[in-house]
Amino acid sequence: MRVTTSQSFDRPSLLMTNLTSQADRLQAQVATGKKILAPSDSASGWQQLSGLKRAGADDSAYGANIRTAQALLAATDTALDQVETQLQRARSLAVQANSDTVNAEGRAAIKVEIEAILTDLIGVANSTDTRGQPLFGGTSGTAAFTVQGDGSVMWTGGGEPAAIPIGDGESIAATTSGARAFGGIAASGGTTDMFQILSAFAAALEPDGTAGGVGTAMG
Image (cartoon, rainbow, N blue to C red; front, side):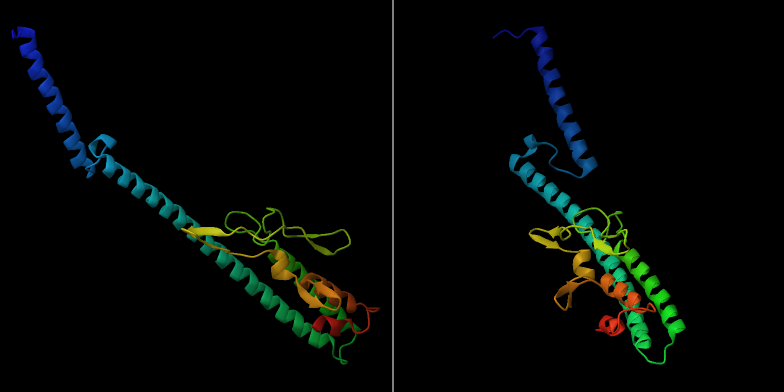
């Protein structure tokens, strides 16, 4: 077979091109520390590498979710600690108000403090989390409680907060709904919430308040 001058130059040129390509790939492997740079390097290896990348992305997402859950749990604990402190103070005031030694002026002063506690608790119930979402609003995305025109407090959230995935098949409920945290308190004929109890307590301290209203609040 006759080999032309052009062919004799083309073959070395093609070999040089291939060698340059291999050299470039080897340099890329050295620079990146990665042996597999494309599916053509190793089909099975590329699939394994893709799987590892997906797993790494999942781990990053779960890590972010865990940090979010931890922040929500901390915010919930702080809020409920504040609620406990306020309710303990309200109970002390109820014991004080239920005494026969407290005069009308003293009852009026207790009423003012109870109303302040009620206002503080509404603020705690409507606090927001690190994302700016209502901490106890459930799935509604709106304020957990709303003060009505007559002064009563109504639950305006909705449902239970969505569980946060923190691993394969694992999730955690990092907070709770306002209805569960502040309501569901057993009372005669059904259930009530702490806002209704405190409102009734304050009303019982009026000069013409319902007889036995303070004792009911204590109960």
